[in-house]
Length: 395
Image (cartoon, rainbow, N blue to C red; front, side, top):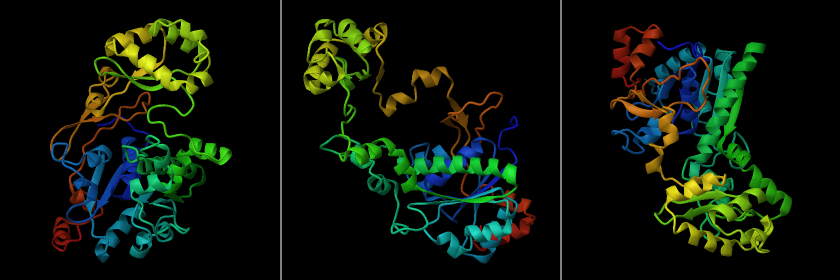
């Protein structure tokens, strides 16, 4: 049994697939909400098939689908629609990220479902919003990253790049999650549900705040600088003799003086007109990089870490994914816990927000339709009726 979680007693019905909606609903589930994941007959959420890297399961699916119940429903059949509406009638939240207009065509638009349940919080996730010239455009994550300008400020000047994670989906999922929490709080005060519209494009454009306002104000975009900075030096990754990459971000004169004197062993550089202030260091960043690289080439990563720590110079290591699982900060703080799944136990990260007195919920990842019979039994369907629905392909 779990200790009482903040969203215990809240029921979420989610017609979800891919990343944005499942990411939002998993965080609600982590907080104790009952999340019933509606999946299509057969394959279920197509994200289940993205890869087979986690004991045969998809890494995307494992990441964002623990703590949920899976119900197969064919929403094109009348009985499937009726079952969904029965669930919605007693639910607190409905989430959907169908293709544009599909929810309305199926009879699951906000007006119709909130007509069944006026306390319902209806969250609709789309690519570009319910109106405007792009409302029907395909909105895969990489496409939205390009359209929202993220690709234009990521990478190097010669090679713009998308981010290595589903940033557009994640941003929309976060706003869906926080929007639902806000709506639940508001319902406590007013007794009324609401309709939320969230889209990937608006969510990601909001995250583009600095480069967007920089460009709108100056007329020119920030320089794409890889791991470096468009106005600060030394800033970025520098390689040690053993291949370790150390990330520097020196942003004030006191720190620069300590770095030059104690790490580079070059006190002369403090007063050198090429390096004596931030603007000069940036103007001579190529010369500065050459000097730093020559010093670091004679050091191991451990030696460099030691010098930087002694000098109180901010730094980190540029790590790749093979190192993160065993990162000492994660290991020491016991951030990995075992979660059940159809393929056996899987190690997963606990939620990033720690709440005093609350143990994180780390329940299993469901198989396709694993909870269909139990959920329908809760609606009053007999085992015989459930078997009939299965034979008819409704569930």
